[in-house]
Amino acid sequence: MDLSSIPPYGLASAAKREFLGGQLQQLLDWHRAHCEPYARVLDRLWSPSPVAPSLEDLPFLPVRLFKEMELLSVPHSDIVKTMTSSGTGGKLSRIFLDKATAALQIKVLAKIMADFIGPQRLPMLVIDSRSTVSDRLKFSARTAGILGFSMFGREVEFALDDDMQLNLPRVMRFLEKYPDGPILLFGFTFMVWQHLVLALEDQAQHLPLERGVLIHGGGWKQMLAQAVDAPVFKARLAQVAGLRRVHNYYGMVEQTGSIFMECEAGQLHASSYSELIIRDPHDFSALGPGKTGLIEVLSVIPRSYPGHILLSEDLGEWGGEDDCPCGRMGRHFKVHGRIQQAEVRGCSDTYTR
View 1 (cartoon, rainbow, N blue to C red):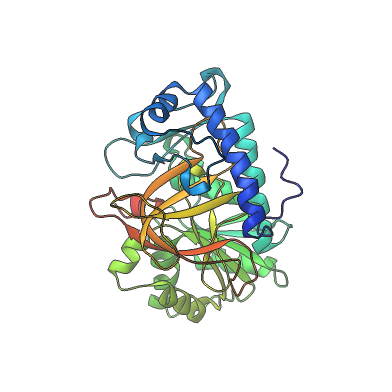
View 2: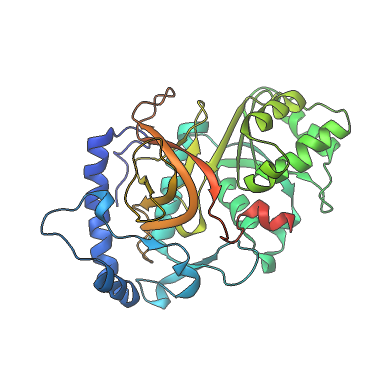
């Protein structure tokens, strides 16, 4: 798929729906023809319409199905990477990537990230320990996240020692090497809070990170349990490190690459290559803006497995479309947490246990 002419947030509603509708119909037909379990699900639960269906009418898979079944649409010999979810117990989702799907993930993620940090690779400070990525026998979701976002960094340094203590002298040496330009920081939300914000407060220290841009995600359940919401998180970061450019992201391993980034106005955004639908948890009808329901995510990326239209176990609401103060086109939304009795998952959640 050639995405070179499609800006990451430049398609207005009508153009985007036309683009996504065509791409998702092609993916639906591909997976139906090449993934027998997916075809059986469609045959039982979905009847195609003689007219082109809307995005809301396309069939979705519950994300939990990837824990119960092996779903792939290419031969096993074509698989170059198998990713697993970060749930803390029970079965894990297994996501199978061939070379083309993995390459498309990288291309889409790069276009999205460039819109927020620019096209150049930046000096990068990871709020984690080097041991997280050095032991490939323990390839965790944290490892995958760090390696994935490290594509957009250079001269990568780790802020924490192996015992998860903040190494201030190392961080200061890193910052002194790059006194002028922007610096990319990456970490999982709970770890940034626990090992950067609280650590600096405990030591009455301040880091000069006014030029930094922080990308973080995951772990909000633990944060809210400590009465720390997004405004508190950002305010405390500004106090201890001068950080003002802070972007949360929402995503899942079942649709790696299709992340939803938080803009300067505090809204999560669906890019040109993905969409978000909110469904009523009782009858699965599509809900309009301002209504809370289950988050469905749609993506043009997955070709090696039928992960193009998934119903998550997260609750959220979308607030508008093509009207965000940041100027980006597409739907913007907020996430409110997980449905009751859904398993805890996420990189930061796994770490805290």
